[in-house]
Length: 182
Length: 238
Image 1: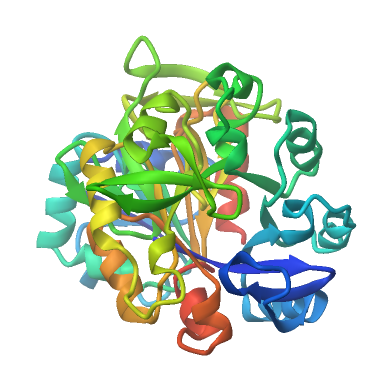
Image 2: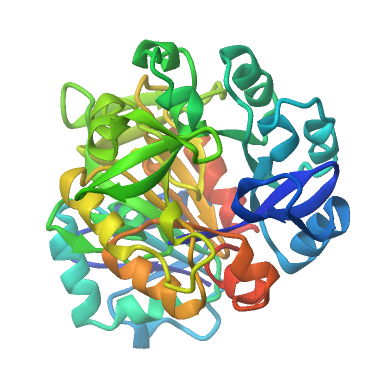
């Protein structure tokens, strides 16, 4: 089973619809207790304010659950950002899975919204964000911008992407399938 | 926080130099077996100081390291020209560590414009002198024209992968990392990724660095002399 972590700060519905379209069985849960025993992959979408998201994670025991899980885990957009060490928005400590700090983007205009490519790769992905990570040792892909912005990162069983694979047409579907079939 | 094992390489051997003197070297092992040990433990990134390069000698270190495509290397030592920097960056799994190149007196920020910032680490050796941190150069013997705040200000428009800062007055002393140094830098430059180096004794020091907001740490001597296990490094890396 593929399990989506559903918080008040996410577009879990659109991610679930995207998995449905791919014919991948999935469930959405709001508490760690509800993660079924047959879960093989976790997806963590997020949209909104980092400080509020982190408070929600702490209040519901998700912070510890995420730090300790050994299942393949994918954070998306804000769900990706809260995996880093520090977040400027809300001036708070993140979950510390990836090294680096999330700050207001130096790009103009904000939010950075639309299709964009990663450095050295021809595919386009759909981005909507005002905050981002400039550099990280965990980064595997950067946006094709003058100033670096991390597009994807990986460490241990954790993956994350700044873009929205569920809104990135076929290229996004490929990212989801690759992760969920890993 | 991310922890990266460091190796200093001289004539194909992993060494440590006392006070930066070539004649005062302690050999920790051969290069290839060390890298192979790292790989089997699960290390993904290695910080490499090319001491041959730093002393101005030729070496085939880059070619040797290229035999390990699964590792990502941060290469420092002797990268004093754009040509040399480009040569390292031409290899996809190599990043560069720039020290003297940035602190030399005629350095221009614009020289870096065409280079990928996310593959460059700035490295500054500092000493506290009359209340401020001064950047040292040339095997720690020479003061540059910069204080640490000045050089950070100069390069503030460059989004380096990280800024490696070493308090060399603590080198070889069991005092632990200089937490105040990193704290001070972060207070003044909240967007940088500080990389700690020097004086890390044990897992407790790593946790203390994480608490002050350091996002990476490079560990060399602590690893070879057994105070920090490779397993501990992996816990923070792979």
